[in-house]
Image (cartoon, rainbow, N blue to C red; front, top):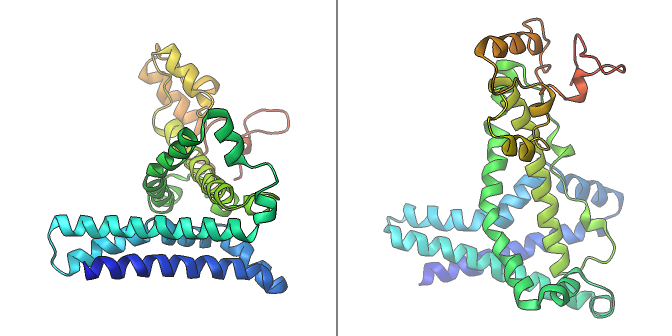
Length: 281
């Protein structure tokens, strides 16, 4: 149990020290503000999120494996890392709410408002239940870094500035304290990761599979995230000749690098709304 205790204490202390360092940046003048801005957007943000969300359980798992421990002990160390993260999070929440007690006790709060609407237990359990999504979004972020980029070189997909998608700015919103702030920052990061992944998938789907679904309900449900369903994909009743002709039209060999976007991408349109000859991304 000594190993588990060391991992737990190390995780709590390390995360709180990192949080304190991030809080300190705003007190360092213009230089600190620049560092804070860098920390709030990709790729620096990804490292911070990795440390706060998945580093501890991975460390526990690797630590156990390196010591030759069995699967059960490795999983226990992994859970210990998660427990350390949760403990550090609660310590930070409590300290932040104490620091801003006068405002937290009087001003409207997201947490208190929703607790009144759906019940405090339901709201609290539901919020923590969403934490299961953290490793899912971590895997999506991994794919955005390591799966998509080769497609930029191989098939002329557009390159994206991740910092314009994956960043956090709700820390600047006045009135977010403790519990409210940490979950709003989580959602801030999550929506950027999801939106960037959706943009990449639009390129993938329209390039390899520009065929509408036979199910009208599915077409209707998916057209918001994949506008090309109604804006360019061939009907489900078409044939492969139609698909080949569409691909030749949308992805001519003369396209410059980065031009093979999904069909409805703004880079493909001229002012008049016609397909541009050489779209730029």
